[in-house]
Amino acid sequence: MRTLVIGIFSAAFVPLAHGQLPTQPPKTWATCAACHAAQGAASIGPPLTGVVGRKAGSVAGFSYSRAMKSASFNWDDKSLAEFLADPQQAVPGNRMPFAGVSEPGEVAELVKYLKTLQ
Image 1: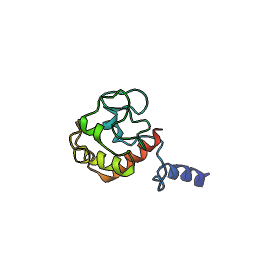
Image 2 (image 1 turned 135 degrees about the horizontal axis):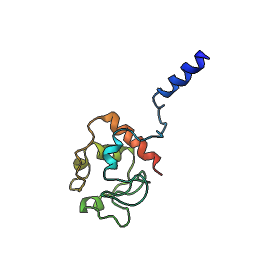
Image 3 (image 1 turned 120 degrees about the vertical axis):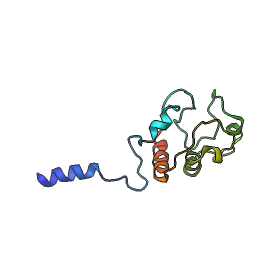
């Protein structure tokens, strides 16, 4: 019994294996959720459901900046990581009033979580 209990508690604290998607949002998600919905309609920012693979600036009915509407890329791991780290450098002139996430590990966790929003 003792081994089983230790095994159960140990499993709860094992970090995600490479490529495994999280089931819960990372702590940093609260910053995003202040303006973006994970599911449903647009809020202050566009909803992030299905963002991975979507063309930047393309959610119907959302009023994007000219810079974001003109962006010519689809959101993928690299473009999301660059944007989350420094939105103004990634898409100069966008209207998102956010300085970015400074910790690379937090950026990586956010990108993993965004992949789950399908």
